[in-house]
Length: 391
Image 1 (cartoon, rainbow, N blue to C red):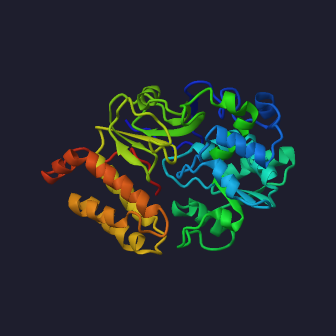
Image 2: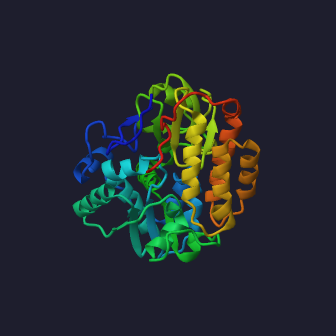
Image 3: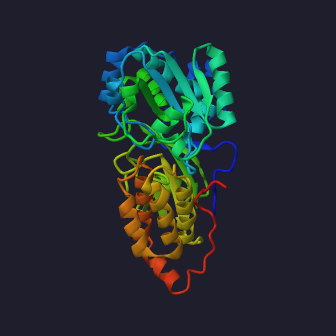
């Protein structure tokens, strides 16, 4: 059984009371009138109020890094540029595009509130697909606000924060070699869901925002669920929801392995008790399920080869380490793959080698029996493509 997100729009569903997805059971897209009717007007804020609110709810970025958003705002000077990163380049993720297409005003609310608090000189939403850009431009025209929509070329590494800013400035969309914080350049950048969460928090206030989720990580988050499930889509869950509840709701009857966090995340056994938190490695907000009908090692080979091809090609771990790692995985060389993964981890110009090494290492530890079967002649199962890989 394989279910992917090849459809133009992902199905949305919720566990618990929806916040980001409020109204999407009734509207295909919330226009500005429907948005105001559902969420109410956006309260006024300033830097001190916003920083205190975000600190009180411990809001972390909803992209891969999960950096505390209040800390990011504190480090950003007045007059900064605010960039909403909608360049969703993780192949197994569709959550940010779903928000942009179906609840664009929630994203705009958050971006405009942050921009007002920082007295920002400019607000930019960067996207890489035409449909999301069109939905944004329609939403902007409905409320006549000054927000720029910039379409990017896409690409896995191009979605990294520093690479995105570099590409928007007219340079190559690859990370610079020095890992400097964007705040030093007068830029505040976070992903689409983060800004939508800001809009929700401003309306709810800290106490109501903390009514759901875990004590350490209150609120909800979005997950893209795909692979060997009967009900793929984007789900809003209270943070800390056990993995088993999500798998049951998505109708994943016989999971063999679960990738948590996307292709910079980790392979995990389908333990029902794993709490889905940022601390547990939610990363890009991906739950990808494999069952026993596919060759798990073949799935890993496909994704590892794709990750190697996504290299920026500007440092040794990317230029040489990741291709060598992909070759080891394709040959079933467990020792060689673990050695090359360890050599790449922490030594790149960006975090792409680190994430690829983490993904492969966790898979190899989980798939030791599978690798041994292949050494003895193969598992006899086809590769069904349960893990999404772009052509």
